[in-house]
Image (spheres, rainbow, N blue to C red):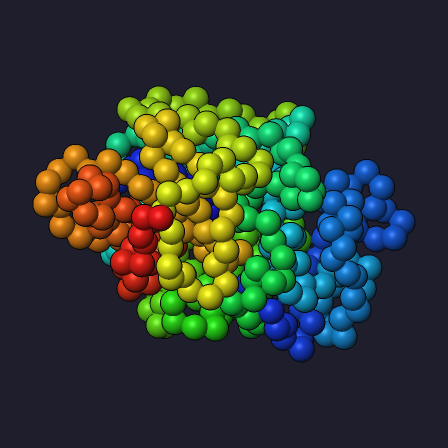
Length: 345
C-alpha cells in the first residue's frame, strides 16, 4: 500500500514474466522525442528495455517499455510518482469498511508533496513533503517501497502479467505478484499503461482479499496549475520528511532468530522516545520490530490487524521490563512467530 495511505490509516482509526510481453505505453517516448521528457529520461536511465510487441491492439514499438521483472515494474511505478503531478479520488476497503480519499500529488523543484483528505467521517488531512534525494546507489525512498530494489531481494515472489482492464476510465495492465510460500501476502497491481502510475492494489492471503486500494478518478496537471486544498480539517497531521536511505545507527541489543526466507535487515534506529527499532524487508513487504518499555504489569500477548498491516505485542519478561511489538504487512501467524523468536543478546 502507498506509504501515505498507511500513515493515514494509523492516524485515522513482484520474477518470472508472462510470455505475452505486455508493455507500457508512454506518450512521446520515441528515439526522436525523449529530449525534455523527464519520465522518459529517467526510465531509460533505469535501464528498462524497449521491446517490440506483436499484438495489434498494443501501442507501436517506439512507445513500448518492457516490464520483465519485479525490479523493472517497481522502477516504472516509483519513477512515475517522482515526475508526475495529479489529483486523484480513491477508495480503500478493509475489515468490511470502505473509505474514500482525495489525493493531491505534486512534484516541483525536486520535492514531492502529498496531501491526503478523508472524504467521509471527521474532516481529516495528512500532509507530507519529501525531497527526492538519491542514496549512494541512486535509489530514493520516495515511492511505494522503502527498500533498495534488486532481483535478489525480491526473489521470494514471482511476477505474471495477467490481463488488461479499464480502471478510472484508463487502460491498465494487471500484474499478479505471487509469493513462493504462505508466510506473506499475494498482490494484484493494476498499472496505468500510459503513465506507469499504480491505479489499484489488491492484497490477498490464501485467495481471500485482505484489502483493496483503488483509484476511481484521476486528473493530470502541471505542478504550477494544481490548486492547493484549503478545506478546513478537524484533524491535520504533517508527516516529517524521512531520510532518503536506511542506515544502521546502533548495535542492537536484541536478535531475531526467525524470519521468513527473503527478509533482510534494512537498518535500525532509535525513536524520539528511546525505543529500539529493527527494520526488515523482502523488497515488497516490510517489518518493524519495536523494543519498548513495558508500562503495564502482566501484559498479555495482543494482536491487532487493519487491512494488510498487523501488530503483535508480546512482553519479553518481567525482569527485563520490555515489550516487543512486531508491525508489518504480513499474515498474523507470521508476525506471531517472529515475535516469539526475538531474544535479548
